[in-house]
Amino acid sequence: MTKKIYIFDTTLRDGEQTPGVSLNIEEKLQIAVQLQQLGVDVIEAGFPFASKGDFEAVKAIAENIRGPVIVGLARTTKQDINTAWQALKYAENPRIHTFIATSDIHMEHKLKMEPEEVLKRVYEMVSYAKSLCPSVEFSPEDGTRTRRAFLYKVIETAIDAGADVINMPDTVGYSTPSEFGALIKDIKDNVPNIYKAIISVHCHNDLGLAVANSLAAVENGAEQVECAINGLGERAGNAALEEIVMAIKTRNLHFNCHTNIITEQITKTSNLVSYITGMQIQNNKAVVGVNAFAHESGIHQHGVLECRETYEIMTPESVGLKKNSIVLGKHSGRHAFEERLKELGYTNVSHDKINEAFVKFKDLADKKKVVSDEDIEALINHEVFRTSEIYTIEYYQISSGNSTVATSTVKVNFNGETFSEAACGDGPVDATFKAIEKAVGISVNLKDYFIKAVGTGKDALGEVTLKIEKESKIFSGKGISTDIVEASAKSFINAINKMLYLNSNDIGA
Ligand code: KIV
Ligand code: ZN
Image 1 (tube, helix red, strand yellow):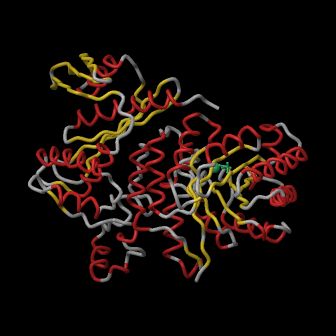
Image 2 (spheres, rainbow, N blue to C red):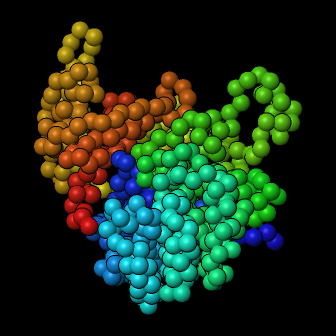
Image 3 (cartoon, rainbow, N blue to C red):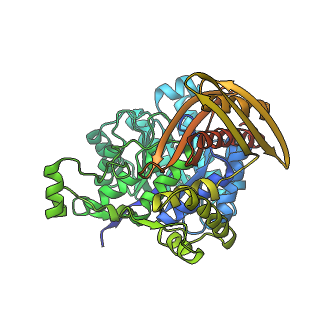
């Protein structure tokens, strides 16, 4: 058996630090359930001290998810560590992940601490974390720009204090693969007690090298890789989980190791994370982009038809891509619908949710001739697992044309009470957004608006993703409908709902 590489998913922590991404508790829990189905070994659920919302989300994940280790991040302070432990203590396998910066530039300008003070803090706080929690991970932040002798000392101290996992972050994505691989080897050669800990790596993608650096670390003895679905994370993101996992699987003879990821769950996880975070996946993204398995040139198509391996190093099925089958229509019954949901991997859906989904499916089937797998997945994600519905759109009507000013009337529902407003705008979508703003009494800046068709055909569902800004905070929203104005209205109200929900939960660190 080859060596196992532990997959530590940080989508819910570093991934949530992606500019413009903020998730509520239900959304985090939904992603955590899917990460469990994906088979990750470790879920970094959040930074409990950062906000009340983060605390509650980590607690909810600790209480509900069984199997993976559940991690909460904490700076090396008692307050942070205590708060992390309060959120994590319900987990089957809890882990506190504590960190402090160790590079000269961070110690001098950010921490304003002397190296000796940092070293003392590492010992005290790792010991303290270990007194609360059976598993402790320590990260020397900005590790790749830390003076080597000091780095070795810090790691040795953390292990002496009880750290079980030593994570080496390339915090600013500065390293190159050969340098990073050598660093891991040097740590193994120069830290006397390193054999007592698991070596983990956490690479940022500022130079587009996060995956390559992580794999170089694996080649040199790292046993845990921290990564995020779709490469989400601070600035240019973290190493993409799906790329790390598929590289190890596809080139297992080269890496001589394996992961426990159920790779057939990759596409579903990627789509769910993209949907919930509002972060689009670029078409040519490795493994999960829509073009990842598309063959455009005739020569390639011919080759693949003759022998798939000519141009495909991994199969679409291995990442959970199904053949684009047209499945159901308006005459399909509940049983067929439920079976199809199961085939698509929605095995844990409650009876009530299936009933709700079936009603929505029938509505859709009335509007569309055929309902494809993509339609069903979009419908489930958008309509059935939609969370925090504070306001809902009851009704809208537009008048628009190339020689009239567009007007829109909307009626929104809030706790059973309805509010109607009308507004003019630069086109029907703009008019509808303005009418919604008036009806809910909130004005926001529209920062981003993106529309795409789900599936093919003139009657395809339109999926709108947008971002709104209020008081320098960004919130994303999504909506689907066969009518693009309705999809826009739904995504706008979805973003407003998220804003209201998150603001009511966030007390700040
Ligand atoms: O990038 C980083 O250094 C981090 C640490 C908290 C591990 O995210
Ligand atoms: Zn990071």
